Image (cartoon, rainbow, N blue to C red):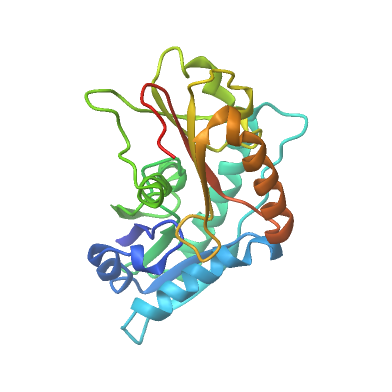
Length: 256
C-alpha cells in the first residue's frame, strides 16, 4: 500500500529540521513541493534547500505542483475554505495516483507543524475518504512559528499557572483581554491588534520568522502598533507576501 509522510519542516530555517523529519525525508521515493506563484517563490526555495541539504538517497525525486488560489469573493469564509480544500484534495489524489506506485512512499513538506493551523492532514483525510487511491499516512511534527516567535523575543509562551489561547484575527475580539491574558494570533489579514484599546496590553510581533528576513517588534500595543503596521506594509510591498504572527499579553509589566 502507498505510504504518505506529512513532514513538518519548521518556519523557514532549514536548521529547524528534526532528526525524525530528516529520516522521514529519506524514506520517501517522491518529495512533493507546492508552489504558490511568483510572489512566494521563497517558500518553495526553502523546501528545495531542505531537500538538497538533507536528502542523501540518490533514487528519490521531487515533484512540484501549483497550489490554487482560494476564492474569497461572493462566498462565505467557511465555504471558500471548503471549496479550496476540495481543489487541493483533487490535486493530491492525482499526484498519488500518477507519481506513486502501489508500494511507493511520498512526502508532503509542510511549513511549521502539520498539527497547528495547517490543513494538510484534513486534505489527506479527504482524499482517503474518497477511496480512489489506497494509502496510509504518518505525521512528523515540526517547529512552529509560535515557538520561533517566543524564541526570537526570548519570552515564555505562558504566564505562570495561566492558560494560553491560540486564535485568529477574526475572533480575537471574543477573548482578549477580557477572557484571556495571553492570546496568540495567527492568520490575521486585518491586523486586529490595532483595535485593542487596553493601555496595559503588550504585543510581541514577528514576520518571516526563521528566515534571513525575520522582523520582530514588541512593546505596549498603544505605543508600537503604528510601527508594526508601517513595518508590515513596507515588508509586504518589498517581498510581495508576508507571513506573520503575534502574541498579546496582559498581566505583567513590560520591560524595555
